[in-house]
Image (cartoon, rainbow, N blue to C red; front, side, top):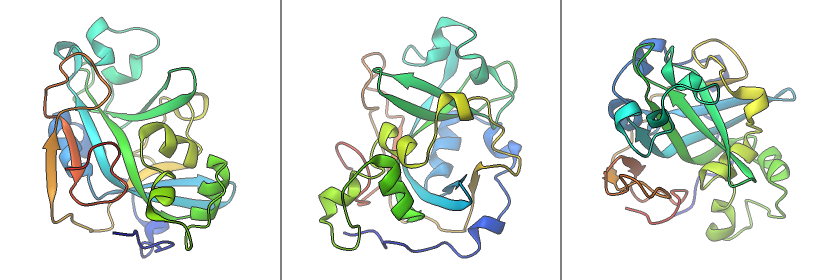
Length: 218
């Protein structure tokens, strides 16, 4: 299965960001409903866009795998609200991960975005990733390297902690999530990836069959 390379969601740049009420809920509900939504970045006068095809829910203080389990710190303060803000952290000394705060203010929770299907600004994403691929000619395995995985998608979308941590994604800005009315036909919940605590919890959500899902596909 190949992505529709270069397909531009109709008028996505004119769509309003998801409202704060969308994020002000249990992260599990938010994670499920984020599948199929479009992450949009304005970068140097151009639109970059990717459909969310994989994410993970983190449940806050009672979730041993969550950053909030250690309590509120300067590093994780965004997780404690208000909802609808970007929480970006640096991991393994080489890449960023993008999350969105959920739950009412004062109660921690978030959703980690794990993979995108590129929709627009693909040539610029390739440059940002430092890849030498031609999407129209590349093999599926090469092309999926663009945004399959949390670190890759952050690099492809020019997301960093300095630029984006704490950013209000419910306001009209350079990083938002919009709904173009696409609805996935097949979704699945699986154990989370890359954690050692509460790893068995089925809090990773994917669009089944999508080639950009990272790791083991459902």
